[in-house]
Length: 314
Ligand SMILES: [Mn+2]
Image (cartoon, rainbow, N blue to C red; front, top):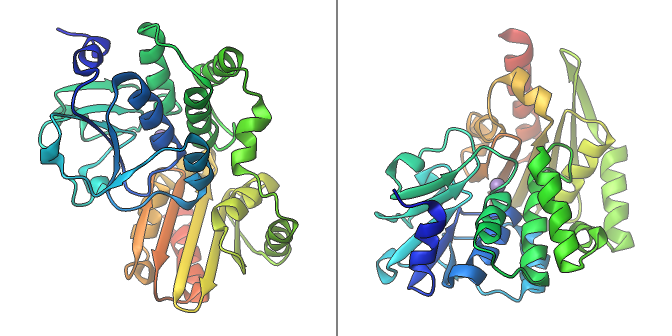
């Protein structure tokens, strides 16, 4: 049997599509970018890239093709994706997979897979590049480091390989930690003020000893604010942004709360009826929601009920 590296060598320079999940995050984008620099090809995203990834896209000066036609490509490599549903209407028939999520349902159907439940897909792409002895330049290193930094929630968690790979990438590229951190920092004093206001006016509920913080925000940076509330000590941080008809919500869970809930962050969003009108996405520790209708107070109440149900009632 061919190794995964041999598969990559075989399609190198071919008509390749590297396909990310919808709401592609920095790990999907970073892994796809670095892989594309080795094997060549187009980077595809079903509908949208996650907002927080915009600065990384700018730095990498990369082009993403939205809603790519799978029939236009000879080889399709799906990255950082666990379920077909995450690919929306872009459903490849023959494909390869590189992923790290638990319960991956694409691996079985893939023609070949590099699958390991490590901290990020970017680590797995780094393994390929290293085995291939491929040169890694500054942008490739930035892409992979960005994937590792965000999938470990800025090293709130992370396996030894995540730290080691991150360190090796800094060393070979001459990047500094601040270069990657800077991609996700809020530089505007006004925006930092909005996050501080959100934290100070947050609603706190404690169930079974777990602290759940909920806040709304006037500026459309809920992912940053949710991470700030997590840093503050929340076990679950939920931040909403509301503007006219537009509603955006982001939630982070700390690992031990997720284990206690025994349900993924994304599944909490899916089980709340007021979130059925919009679009939900995410994975075990993070969930996002977007809609053009909805009331944050109603949604927050329902989310709290859901936490209560899992932590107290069951
Ligand atoms: Mn990932």
